[in-house]
Image (cartoon, rainbow, N blue to C red):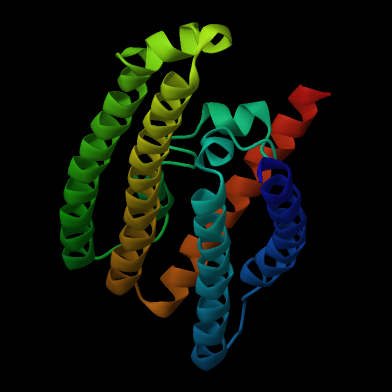
Length: 217
């Protein structure tokens, strides 16, 4: 299962990155573009990320442990992660150059505060799940794996399934928060601001990966 999930998502992600670069080129070249075309570009960007999280959700269901430390990312990218991806709080850094109105800034701050609260809650939930790794009976069973009898093997399997489900729930909630945060930010922005926002998010991903690839050589 792990091998199939790894191969499937790696192939998807390689293709997604190629499409990401093409989309980024479009987002970065929007001078004299009509509002109608800008709206279509925003829709393309939203669909691009929707597809990513759709495929990631499938992978989480198949192998949550793999997604906890995804090998298709560089070490540098993973160092920036919060629950398997960039944190929702990062998105607000890309708004500083958008010349928000006073009303927009007020609405964005409301979104930011709520996102920060939920991010903290989810982070605490993940910490609780990780702490459970050292709790009985799981730790004791893992520590005695070579000497387990049939009943204990079944107990270990049950404990692992509980752990995987707990991790799956937290990771799904984390991705849900990422998506909802972006949706709520976009609701505040005008169409050109949305384009610039997606361009900034996309450029950050590209630069983080480029740095990571250089460091991993």
